[in-house]
Image (cartoon, rainbow, N blue to C red):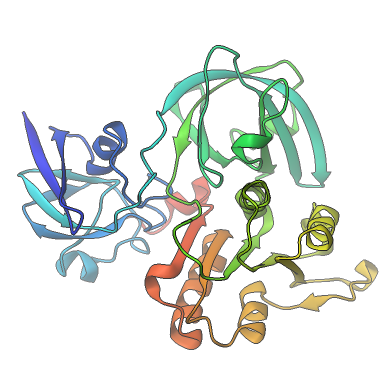
Amino acid sequence: MSFQVNIQPADVSFAVERDEPMLAAAIRQGVGLPYGCRDGACGSCKSRLLEGRVIHGAHQLKALSLQEEEQGFILTCCATPQTDCVVEARSVPGAGQFPVLKLPSRVLELTQAAPDVMVLKLQLPANQNLQYHAGQYVEFILQGGARRSYSMANAPHALGNPPAIELHIRHMPGGKFTDHVFGAMKVRDILRMEGPFGSFFLREDSARPMVFLASGTGFAPIKALVEHLQMKGNARPVALYWGGRRPQDLYMDAWCRDKAAELPWLTYEPVVSDALPEDAWAGRTGFVHRAVMADFPDLSGHQVYACGAPVVVDSAQRDFIAACGLPEDQFFADAFTSELDKQGDPA
C-alpha cells in the first residue's frame, strides 16, 4: 500500500510507501523539498500539513514543539503518512537533481588543520560519477548501519585528478567516527558513503547580495560555495563571516584572506569569541552573528547562508529576522547537528 502526497503551492505529487517517511520518498523520486539532518534534529524540513494524517517518529522538541505539532506543522523527515496528504512546503528546485549513490571512497590525504580539525580528502571511484551541488553533504555508512554526515568543502568542478572530495572533520572526543579519523584512519583506507544529500546550496535565480555565516567546521560548505561562485564568474556581493572560539578554530583563515584579496565581490570578517591573551588576537571579538548585525543592520534586501553549530544558526535566524528585517524565506541554513544534539529533548 502507498499514499499520495501533494506539495503546495508547487502542486507536485509523489507516492509514499507504507511506513516510509515522507522526505525519504521525496528524495528517492527526485522531488525537491527543504531539509538538513534527516534525523528530526534541525527543523529545516518543517512544513504544514493541510490535509491528511501522519505519525511522527522520534524527533527533537527544538525542531518541532508540541505546540507547533498541534498547529499542524510536521517534520517531513520523520512524518509517516497514514492517509493521502496535502502539505504546504517550500519547493527547492535542484534538490533532487542528482542521483543519490552508494559508493566506496579511498582515503587520499589526512591533514590536521587545527588541534581538533582534520581535512580529509577521499578519492572517488572512476566508474561512478558523483554529482552534487556546492553545499551538499554525504553520509558515511559505519558498521552496524550508523551514519555520519559531512559536507563537501570543494565545489563539484574542483574535484581534481584523481577526483576527490574534501571534508573538514572536527574531533568529537568519544565520537564513533571522529575518534577513528583522529586515531586509526590511514591513507588508502576504504570508506562507504552515500550522497549527495541536503537542500543547502545557492539559489542562483536571485540577484540579492549575500551574507555567508560560518562557525567552526561549518566553513566547509561555505568554502564550496565560494569556489562555485568564482567558477561561475559571480558578480553578487558576498560578505563572509567566520566565527570560532579561538583563532586556531579559523583553520583556513589564510585561504579566506587570499580569496578576499583576489575576488572583488568578496569581503571577509573573522570573529573570535573566547580569545586568550597568548592568542594575541587583534581582530573582532564576540558572537559572529552579532558582527553581521553590526555591519548590516538592514538585511531586508539580502540572502543569508548560515552553517555551523545549531546554537549559532538558530540565533542568527532569530535575530536577523527580528532585528534586521531579513525575510524569513531568504535565510538558508545547514545546522551541524552532532549525535549528542540528536539525543537531547526527544519528543
